[in-house]
Image (cartoon, rainbow, N blue to C red; front, side, top):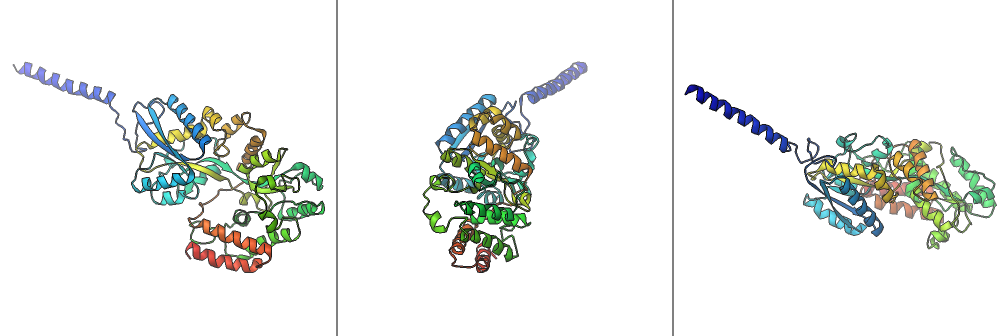
Length: 438
């Protein structure tokens, strides 16, 4: 009898271990709240996952993004992606209450003007843990990734980039006696070359957007328009303001750049002097080059920014980001969708750089045969800028819009001769520091 009881006990113990082993083979032990070993990953994960993704844009963007989603779902049958999209204004109106209720979509298209706010409110996940794991960054420059930094974390992955440059008509440049824009040209070279345009009876450019190019000028001298924490201006010496805007005003006074009255009469890009072959070029972001070339309907080129300090001044501006919400229960799967969006060649042949020049060097190369010649020129210029620029730094503060309006107003007053650059520098500092909180 004792032997029989022992056998029954031994058999019972064996059954417990056998059932436990079976259970472990069929049950996921991972967590479902982010990076703690969850098995909701897209590639090979067995758990059914539903991701919500939200973006703003026009119908073209909606259509191709939905095609990319279908492609992702075909390659990852365990993942279902629910799309939520709207126009710019409606998008942010919908996103705000979702953020307040802690119910943001898993993947959010994020803008440079909002990323600091959402990150500082702990509504976005730091993407650093996913780099080298779910998100392959091996073909992406550090200066591109850093565009999504807020504090010590990366809270948005850059979907495309733009860079400042001089977009010009090479034939008009030759007409004033200059073969090409030198890669290492300086502000003195700029003034000398532009004077030749005046002598030829045409404009050299249409001026520089005050906040954009003053910030570039400051960066060439180791400063920037805003302090890193957004609490004030990022430069202390008002002589830098005076020097830059004195140069800009003199260009108008000398007839190299049109007057404010002339510019106010332009109703669209089709009226731009360079389009009408009455000017050499325009200062603008690289994403505006294709539109300029299409309207001009002739070959155009992209030249670099003047120096000295051009590499320090130039940076890659994110067109927009994909962020992962902090409330997402499927952070790894969300990160893998972002990886697919930026690194999958088939997906990018649908996207075709609509969200900005692709951030992956391999994707850029693969798409060159798929895009227009003008778009390929933009790809090449941004690729050059990746190697000849520095990190963007902190995103603009929430009050940047007011600062831009103030600077635009003062720039116009200076060009009209209503205020001197020296007085405008003091005026700007006083009002800007008040707006930014000092």
